[in-house]
Image (cartoon, rainbow over all chains, first blue to last red; front, side):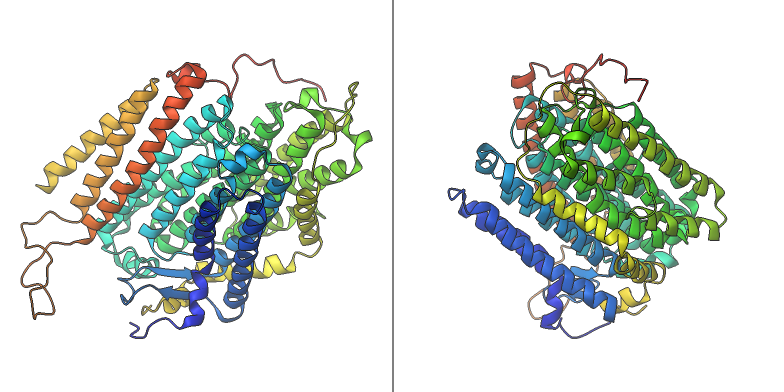
Length: 494
Length: 125
């Protein structure tokens, strides 16, 4: 039990959230000054990136950072705590948000700016940072809701009928998912009497695993819906292709990963004994998601819907981190890279759509001869998603395979390899239709390549030099397997 | 008392799921309201139902005297009610806009984002 208050440097943990909320409020005040909005947003996001980078640097060198608010000491006060996984995901998400806002600055219609696309993006990022960095389960629920209400606004931003249709499906499914999450929290509180994550680790270890496993199953369903795990994934392909491409990039890159993060945090760190009871169910869902995602992508001709199905396949890969002990490391690195890779892929898809004037790959074609920049970017990203060696997606899949081999889980080895093959086939089909097929009409010039080049360049560089990402993933996986440092940082006896 | 309330929570959940599975959007929304209230009741019961004094510290004392009720579940429910109300308000406005734009409150007819009767995907490369 600690008796001292948080030193001022540890307030760094809440800064990303404070900046997001404060920046969003400032932009609402300045809502009539449309010209300043993108630049102020970029400035705020730059601050968030710096805070997240400092946080990651501290978690990698000296271990988890934590603070508790007010004069209520843990486990009673609400704690914010960042370990390697939180800080890594928060940093990558804020980088993606920076690229997305750059893309919005170049191509967002004035109507969307007047409707408040920038304050909504900052509010979304405050929710995302809060969800990654909080050390309190009920607070996690609150950040989920902040994220949700901002994303509702973003999906419906231009107000086209197709977007309203998408928002209805997205909204209903996600509200039901958060209600289930809240029900799980009620059941957890009834059994453990605490919400502080560090405290839950200790109390849950002494509780009866069988009754707690039922609660863990409710959490699995709730976070599975958030992360779009089969069979509760139908909302994702119904909604992610409807808003403008930069919004798709932000949501496809970041939002589903928050679901995966919560899933890994709950199952691997907080309730490990209950997780081992649920392993057969999680395995079945992961394998089905891994295979059905890319299979659907092969049959889909709408470009961004097809990418959505590839994204679902990636979520299946990521949640295998909760199946075997050895896969945690690979799963963290996989999520870290897929946040940025899928955001870049959605941005490039937006460029393809504005170049060809169509959202359907059957009506595209001829891009290979017309634009070498688009060809290179699309190829790098699609090969990276499939996991072909020199690109970024290869390294986490290698780590995952090592983990599966160490635990002799041949089903997962086979599924992951098949997932990679099917993703490659789906990507090759998209490539063949959009780039190689003949085209009679001339192409129009898309407006801004810079954001897509920025994100794709990051993916390319990280693929050639992945050691930073892998080092961060290694530290994060260590803290997940043995949370003693995390508990001590929050200030509770292990 | 707790057993009866637990059964009631189960009943509300069942009714909510039934309504959410409906095709009419307005019933889905009613189901969501019901689900939110069921969850709030669940948290209330999970905090234990007692006939205890309110958790108010008497003047001059450091802690409430005797057995006192747990104030945390009520604070949680209050938060959840506020958030749930905001979400519901948004969904109602959204449903109204969707009805005006698409002339449909039946989810079977809301197929703009996922069009029906698309041609088969091409079988060659």
